[in-house]
Length: 394
Image 1 (cartoon, helix red, strand yellow):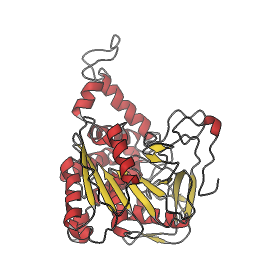
Image 2 (spheres, rainbow, N blue to C red; image 1 turned 180 degrees about the vertical axis):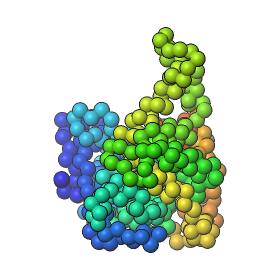
Image 3 (cartoon, rainbow, N blue to C red; image 1 turned 180 degrees about the horizontal axis):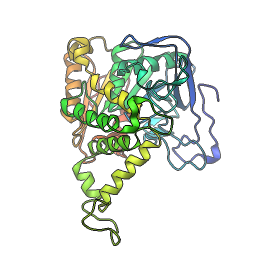
């Protein structure tokens, strides 16, 4: 492992605007951690990556919070032969919207995850077996509190900004609520202050696909085993909610695969969109734990700022950060009106808040895709003096 506040970068492997090769770190918290549920762990590990250099005053930090199926690897590559950069590589790097020439960027896999952080697939030291469903129930607040302990470990004096989309946006909002003097800017995209019935329903269908798979075995399954069919189906269905009808139609339409050897009246793959969804499901089961999927989707269901704090305005009463909320017109999972409601509540609470709505036909995942408009919004927001109110609406 390298020093916690720098990454080893091979200059000969750096393309313009790229952070290069990055090395994950493990933050081990060796004290008891109590969850919102009251359940405890004897300690936990968060896997994280950093990009850029921490300044002398330790206040040039941008925290990136990932969505449901994301992880700590949001920029750069892990080896010279790694063809798949981090999931937000288009946004983070030298000269990019989140400019690592100026900012020290941190991203951690959430508590309850399965990419190196402690979660249901981790070994319970009391039994020497995976926790499975004996793992404490996780909330978005638990994820945020664990990340704050990581930032304390890194010696961060304040966050210049916290940025996230979807579930990451929920975490960003909670950082502003729970640590008002620590967070200077909050940028939440394609998110909501609470999931609606439809989003909860989609999550439940995914959970049932997993739990009805005999391989789930009430959460007790070996590493590399488990409800692979159920998890793949859950991913296939969830992925449909992340995109729009227009984007699916543009990418696949009703195009068929080469079906010369396929019986027309059969259930074999015939359409390109079927092949794509099956690929999504198969690739997901190779990197994600089914029990983590259950836990994290349930954490999403329970996220409700108005219920937790009395009203949405009461939730934001202590916020000191300047906040930008970004919605996307084609997002039908967390639609624009849910994003606007957050900004309106902040303004009613007397806070410095702005709302921007980007017109796209790419669906919920618009925040992950290449967009010069989005890059400009992010760059301008990060560079804005925190004592000024700027209208970012477009």
